[in-house]
Image (tube, rainbow, N blue to C red; front, side, top):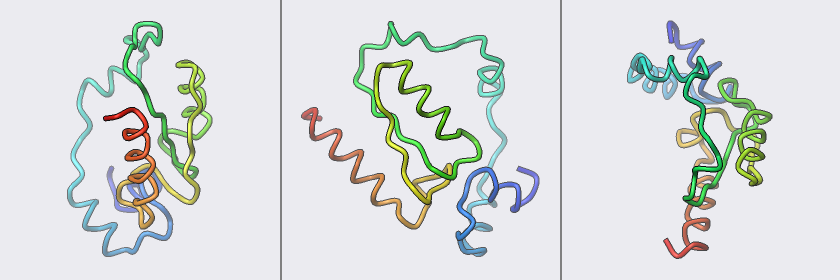
Length: 113
């Protein structure tokens, strides 16, 4: 991300305080080469080979992975995605991150994990 404004657009909610945005922006690093290769679609996942339980979550205001893409991923695995309202890509850094954490914990408990 070249600027804090670009990071806000791609990763964070519009209402994230500027001080917090700058703190997180300072910690950003370049993405891995593998991530860029994955974007080319050369190594797509094969849902038939996945045997582990999956929980697919997304954010309503995600500019990096849209809710439509999250739903398409879930459909590929025969699942239903859950989209969290008023959140952006980095859900774990949002002010209402607890709702996501609670959903993950309940999903784990449902499976005895």
